[in-house]
Length: 205
Image (tube, rainbow, N blue to C red; front, side):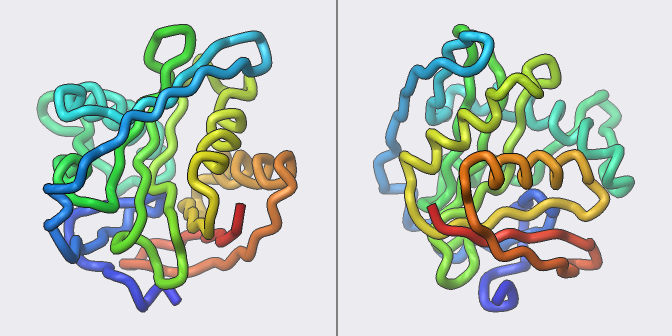
């Protein structure tokens, strides 16, 4: 059950619900650099690369765009006085084992990001969680998002947890299309976390 994993603290996921970090010993763990080049519809080559600490500002800038898009479905998201949306405690993705930031590049240009979670930042009996998934607007509906997720699932097979705000119908429809296209069977439930209604899916790839 969701109640069996941490809920308090600074991290956010698709539902913008905070998670409490349990252990910071992961500072000593080596991080990996995953690179893959595939061809998607429209013949665009893309890569998934683990974001290094020097690229934290790039992740922060992409997250501001992501939160801007999310704000139409989540009125509690507020823009800062500097004109940017800020993601809470993104530094933990370079500090704690179980949290991995990825950049997505298409034709050698930034195309999006993934914030990828594993234990202890996922529910019990779950291996991985896609905490955030973002593709730039100009590249949507071209097959890139589905192609990236298909490759990600190949890189990290296991049991997954994904959640969307119930108010974010475009995100829900996107994920349903991905599941249908990739033949993924999933269990779905509507829940409330921290006063926010979310739709969750659990599945195995």
